[in-house]
Length: 387
Image (cartoon, rainbow, N blue to C red; front, side):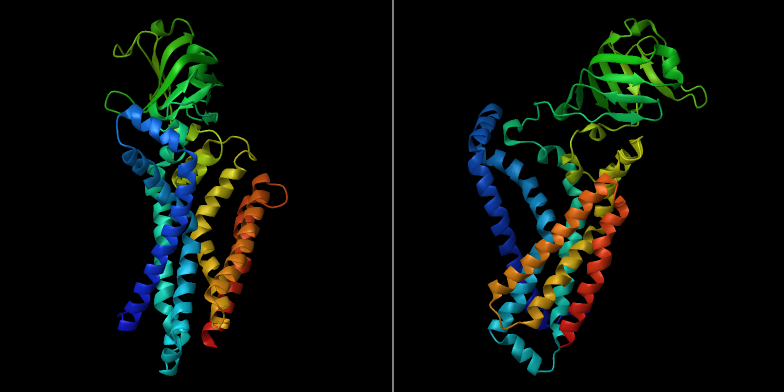
């Protein structure tokens, strides 16, 4: 589609308003957060011997990306509302309609721009934000990442082992007082039902060894250095590497080979907000109990429907503007935000019900608002564009 001069004018106005709205929302959140934690940032800058501005940029850069991802649908709606409201206030919309240009034609470039904003948020959600999930999960009092974080026990089906410990130190990929409860398989026959160590450090796969956890200070079993390594009897793939067969290991240490990634062990639900969809699916596969993964199922389906949900938010707000373009812009924005807030409350409420798994399944709880409101919003928007 070739862009006309009117299209370029509308798009320039749209993205200018989008930028103003984003800077206003993100700036307000940053200012409030900054003045509440300024002492922590100053203390961290002194410890690292760097400037406060560098510390603030390193923290609030990823924070701004997260804000944009969370409010992208609202930003797209506000930018579209204020753009159409502005050209109506300046009588430019009246001139366009008098020239025979339909509302649909006027709204088309703005809808295309809104689609790009929603798609950009989806790309950030799956690519950029997961790279900064550890930094986004840190509090200003723990900018170095040295404070302990809760651990979420995870089951490794390959070794038939439950992995847990006292707490995590994410900045170093460590598990303090790691505890491996072996429930069967060759490991149970080789070393017993427990493997306890002072520290477990996650290592990526290299030429020397597969991915797994380097256990240091092993105190159960006591004679770990004299025990031979354990391999799968069928595939001959390593399950546990010991110093008996691998001299590169330090005394009192061993390598527990595992397919469970370190991010899977993060406790709480905060990590789900910043993790990518493949990471959520990997964690769901590690769940053994049917109801234990309902919150993960809800999160995964929310990721799948999020662009459509954001588009539904847009469709719910457009008819308010197009049906009453003579009203004040801030009145229109307030009514639209109220409608969007009600829709968001319905989405979050059904998601909470789906997490329990009793009244509604996680899949139905996530998809139900979309199945009800998307056709209704599309019909109302179509009607408003035709009148």
